[in-house]
Length: 114
Image (cartoon, rainbow, N blue to C red):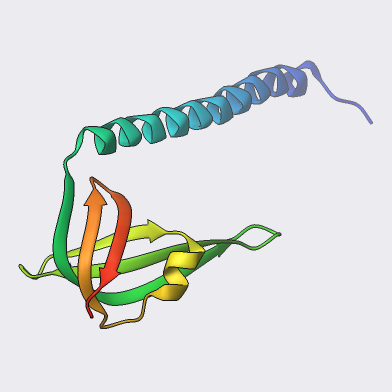
C-alpha cells in the first residue's frame, strides 16, 4: 500500500492538534472545578426552610458511576439543585420539609422537620 507525502503531512498536523485539544479540555475542567470550589468557600453558609421537590440520578461509564441530585424549593419559590452523596440521597423523600444548609453550589445538609 502506497501513502504519499500528503497523508503524512496531514497526519503530523492532526495528531498534535488532537493532543493539544484533549489537554486543553482537561486543563479547563481542572481550573473550572478549582474556581467553583473557591467561589463556594467564599460564599456564606446559609440555612433556609425548604422542601424536597424531586430527586434524580445520572449513570456514567462502564462501571456504572452514579451521581445523585436533589432539587429543593425554598419559601420564595426558587428551586435549587444540589449534587448529594448516595447516603444522603437515600434518606430524602420527595415532599420532605426541613432546613436546607448550603454554601454556594455546595450541599451541606438537610434536617427534616419533626
